[in-house]
Image (cartoon, rainbow, N blue to C red; front, side):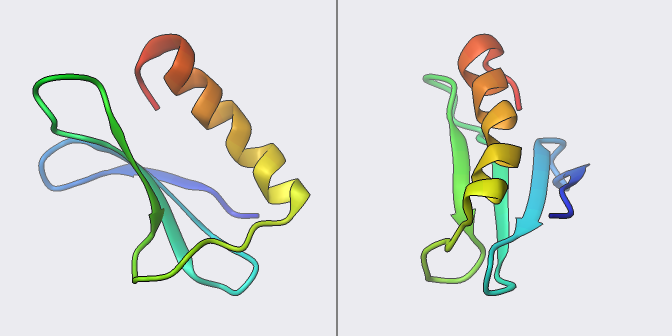
Length: 71
């Protein structure tokens, strides 16, 4: 799986990858002012279809968020 990292136009970290069906998925820092939050999902209205290997690659990103509040 190809995971790419970048930033939104507003400077929030954005991590992109594709699911098993080739749908573009993102994990993005949220601009929510009241608490730390992330956006996590596909770019279009759908659900992600992930293999065990893909979940294995995404887990460190989510664990980093749990540990540090950053992605």
